[in-house]
Length: 130
Image (cartoon, rainbow, N blue to C red; front, side):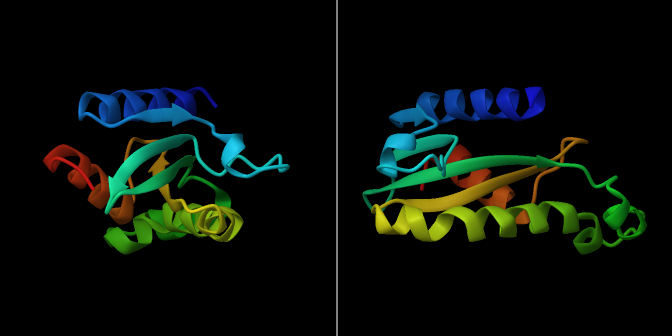
């Protein structure tokens, strides 16, 4: 949890430094639900739409990923993060869309890597936005 919260806080600070209005853990975007579909909500991220970003940190050292992660192939090394992203999409994408928010997980591994999709989002942030 501490890695997750550290990454979340650094990302929120980065979004704010880039001029975005942000908030943390907006359970209010889903009325009458305990689901918190986004660790960071960024207002007007892309095309005037708000984005709920959900940080997920996973370990490629989980038994189910160890053999694949030992491979030199980048797509094999990314499997744990892609699987975590998929779970987040399944859990939150539809409910966010129903409330008018876009949704994207931001997947990192415990060694500091990020998924290809997360890398693209970070590149958008660095280059000036969504």
